Amino acid sequence: MLGELYPFAPGTMAIGRLDENSEGLLLLTTDGQTSAAISSGMVEKEYYTQLKGVPTEETLQQVSNGVDISISGKQYRTKICTVNRLDTIPVFTFPPKRVHTPNHGPTSWVSVTLREGKYRQVRKMLAVVGHPVVRLVRVRIGKIRLGDMAVGEVREVPELDY
Image (cartoon, rainbow, N blue to C red; front, side, top):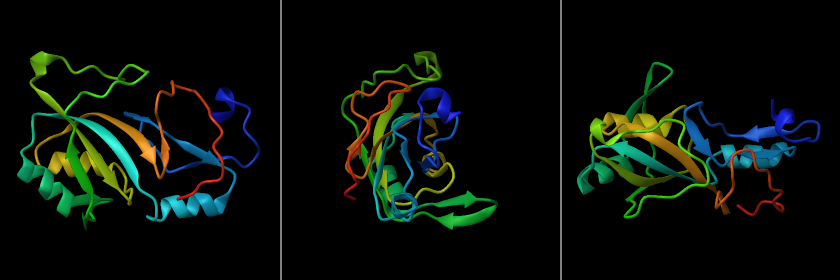
């Protein structure tokens, strides 16, 4: 499927993953060491998330300190991360996959920055504190930012400095 978007070199692999309802930055590489370093927890990943409702500062701190979620049927305590309220609604060059209408209740935006990346982790962390994710966009991996990239746009980046 990647080859349908761009003529990638043989052996090109995605670093990390985005589930079908998530959007944003995805890095591709032919370097297994780079992939391993980013996936190992050495590199920060930042997500902008639109939530149902408006969490309190205490709730955001609770998520920051780690919460218990289920991973493959086993309880897992998430590592410390950074969760900050976004004062302005982020603007992306691509429309949301799903639209949340005001009659579904208020929403808010937060930034979540973490080093781990368990399956659907950000969604699970926020749902467990009562604020399901409406939209999730990965905006940064290490020092590489999504910026104003469009859907399907490919940019070559220099050797990663993570």
